Length: 228
Image (cartoon, rainbow, N blue to C red; front, side, top):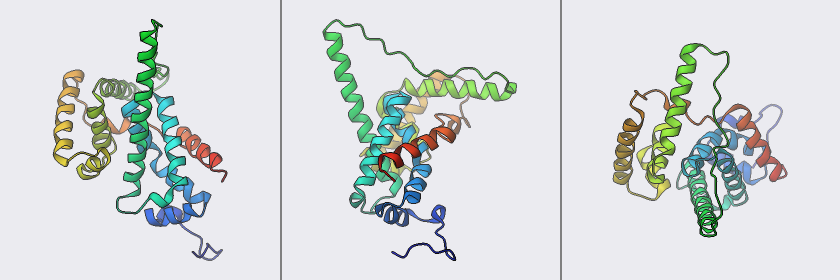
């Protein structure tokens, strides 16, 4: 593959999945950075939908990236890069969740007190306009409500309503039929309405933000682990 020249530098943001994967396979750090920056938030939200813990979700995303970048030969291009990465993250999150549950069960059987504390709570903003603060509080309520859903329901809500993945893509990631996706989403939305009484339309994109410093930190960690 010809490299960039001074006259014709590569526009990484304009590369499609195949172009990015081809360059990442050559250990092109800028291609890796473009992929992680492009998909960090989607993958974090997917992991959180299963684990409900930011630290665990971040670790799963990093591990999934390393697995993906070290095994790019496994990306056949039959599905989108996004779908392939989401599937890796979802499987890793489910596995981690099962391991945590087994450890928790073992501790309980040994009569060890287990406290699952919420380590990250949203603190009220100090100097924000009243309307922005209200939207933030509603977004926090939505995040809390999603966390109360069963895993099957929370995952489909995050992938469809927050990430905007199509029914087909969601079905492919979850390994279920499109009809199952539609049914789960309908039931999940009914449960959310019961939990949340207020109107929640328009708030989904403010839920589970993973941008700015969070996004850059994840990208830097992946590049460092790949020694790029």
